[in-house]
Length: 194
Image (cartoon, rainbow, N blue to C red):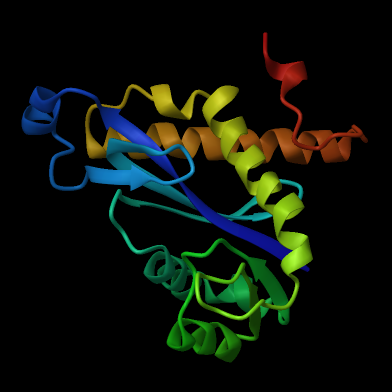
């Protein structure tokens, strides 16, 4: 009954010349990743996942895309997913805030849990955030470490999208296979590292 939502950078170039000549210019943007304290030029992969790491919804946007708007767009694009899971709890970080945003999620019968922002009173479920935030960071690290998301090698919008989708499919297939074969850790890709 719990989904995690977050975004992670997908770098597309490091040099200033790349940003000028790339076919990705216009879609890829300069953005800031607070969890890594760095600026990057590229895209963002937005994920809604189960606690086990299974991707439910995803989107690939420019680096400056608003996480709240992207989540709304993902939910609008797949209303059948939300309809099949009424009363779902979504856990996000401090960027998923705002009365209107939370009201919109409540109208979809989704409950948002997030840490309090500076100046806000303590929110319900605050004791759950630290261990569960580590889960989504671990899922993002699986994409970056074992599935080489940051070294995707795409040079065009279609190339980048294809390579990112392949990695999402690979993780989904590994979790499905590990579940069907009774493996103790569903998100482990160690057996497929050869």
